[in-house]
Amino acid sequence: METRRGIAVTPGVAIGPALVLDTEGVVISQRTVPAEQVEAEVRRLTAALSEVAADARAREQALSEKLREQIGGILHGHAFLYEDPTLRQGVEKLIRIELYSAEYAVSRHIRSVIKQIDDLPADHPWKRFRTDFLDLEKTLLGHLMGVTANGVIPLANEPVIVLAHDLTPSETAGLDPDKVHAFATESGGPTSHTAIMADALGLPAVVGLGRFLTDVSGGDLVIVDGRRGLLILDPDEATLAEYRALRRVQESVHVEELPTELLAVTKDGIQVTLLGNIEFPEEAAHVVSRGAEGVGLYRTEFLYINKTDDPTEEEHFQAYKKVLADIGPGRPVVIRTLDIGADKFSSLTGLLDSEKNPFLGLRSVRLCLKNLDLFKTQLRAILRASVFGDIRIMFPMISTVMELRQCKSLLAEVREDLEEAGIPFKPDIPVGTMIEVPSAALLADRLAREVDFFSIGTNDLVQYTLAADRNNENVASLYNPADPAVLRLIQMVVQAAQQEQIGLNVCGEMSGEPMFAPLLIGLGLRQLSATPRKIPDIKRVIRSLTAQDAERVAGEAVRMETAREVARYLREQLRRILPDAAD
Image (cartoon, rainbow, N blue to C red; front, side):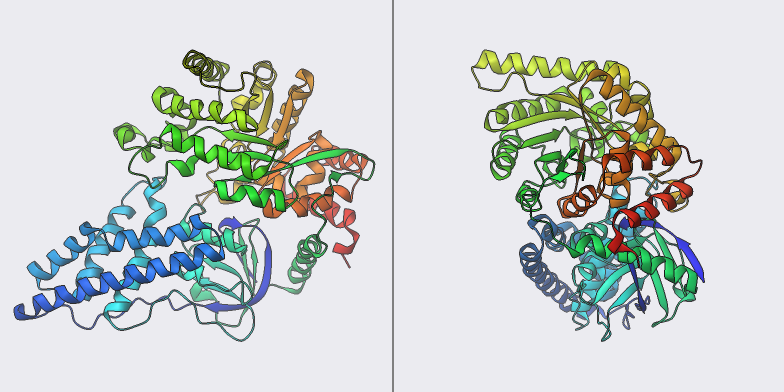
């Protein structure tokens, strides 16, 4: 048995035979052409670019209908690149000057782009597009060489676990969840388009495992643990039994679909409010259909990404208004202000030249407080939309009391501007802050006096507390929400919120994991926010325990010394709470 640790992308456990994809590239037989053939090669290139662009747009429409518009939009980006004159001119130049064949010119040009990406710092945001360019190269070469490259992976007759050096977004989109139960790759990261596709398809996935394909053959039994970021090759009987039991827990949570009108109430009558996390306005309807009571985290970064200009106030306003309309009256919508780095803004890219570590640099509220016009535009739109429903505003990555006061002061200025202009808004909109860096958790008692609610962002809290970048496979093993240090910080935040009697929510991945639900409730949480598809899972766990059970679980967990102890204990307790999950 061999265990490889990588980067967890999509939670879940899958056990099955391996399907190892061919890792060899396309063999280009002809590298150069006679001078008299240059024009013909250029025409072949132009025709191929036109064909692959049309194909990408067709698959974009199909994928949008199957999943959602923004997922299909990834292939829209591919079509845009195929039609980009810079790509065509770069390849055509190599054909005309170097007398390269169309195929070889395509490969040389795109590989030069990939090399530039490879030379960027490990945490540079363009790193996520490396696989997209590989996808473009493979698809374009397929058309030039008469090979259909539709991204669909040939499968065996039985369900399999796909193992590959990497998967392109097109290949991932072509995976059939009925035939593929999970995938694992040697390279890749959790924020890539491939990872987004995996999450949309609900496939357990682990990436960034390093070289392992030479150690496995097609048909070998493997296990993918998408929560812990593990790939287990040829598991022994004890490990196989453990993961089969864990998978039964996973499956049991899905077995019984609870009516959406049922509330998340413990067996002894303690109600827990379940909210949904969304990234796009279209997801609001899923929040309601999955039985959530509102939106606990509305990420607004989609308005900025892949845009040539910053979004206008009206674009912000219409997006927020749509979510309020879809979520319905009486349900809260918590809007998190902009939480990305300066690299997304053409007017600010110069600021990145001195950024050695973007995770500790100019991002989130720090960026907004450096660009007040950008910040005010969003705040104005949020306030304007507040008259259409229960909007609440939340500031991310607050690390000091002064930062929070600056944000509140700017919000007050925007209120005054709207009032003077006679533009309607709700003057008493609730204001909260995320607790996602250790300094904020340590200052929770002070910050609680400044806001109406807290929301614990466990993803960043874990990362910053343990100094472990979850995108880095070399330290990914340290990234663990069950670590006692993280639990102690959460406990401090809960106590501070209770002392000041303000609202408290958890909106990170931790709140979407069923095994953490008893712990969080036992620590005193009465509100959790997760992706819509996880809401029924969490609701079922809550309805299967008592508050006393949860307090006992939390009391035991916080006394443990290692993350491994805590995680093992929480899994055992989940099996006890859901008896049908264990044999």
